[in-house]
Amino acid sequence: MPAPARKLALQSTTVRLPQYLYEEARCAVQKGVTEASSLNDLFIESLREKLKQLRRSQIDAAFAEMKNDQHYRREAEKITADFAANDSITIKSSVTED
Image (cartoon, rainbow, N blue to C red; front, top):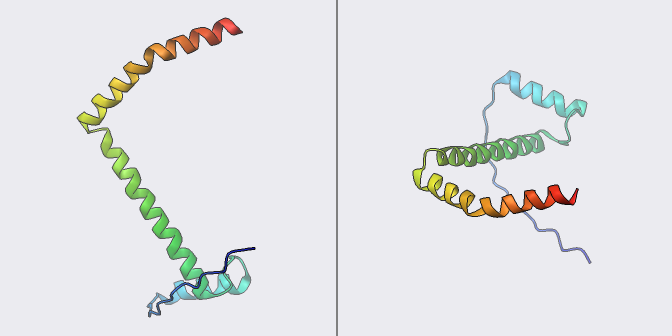
């Protein structure tokens, strides 16, 4: 039995758009070139996608900072050294099995 659909709380707001952007979005919905069935749905989909991109950018920026983190680099080098012996054994055994 499927779970009951959860109703999302909606918040109304007013958005002022440049007219050309409004017309282009309205035209895209009317022509069916988007999966959105209404201008409102297109705004929601677009905003959701933009926020997703922003979150990804923030995560990428945090990872980029790791290259400057000396503590992280020392830990990564230690882990690499700890596994080097196992990696060597694995490589040797795979070569001899062929």
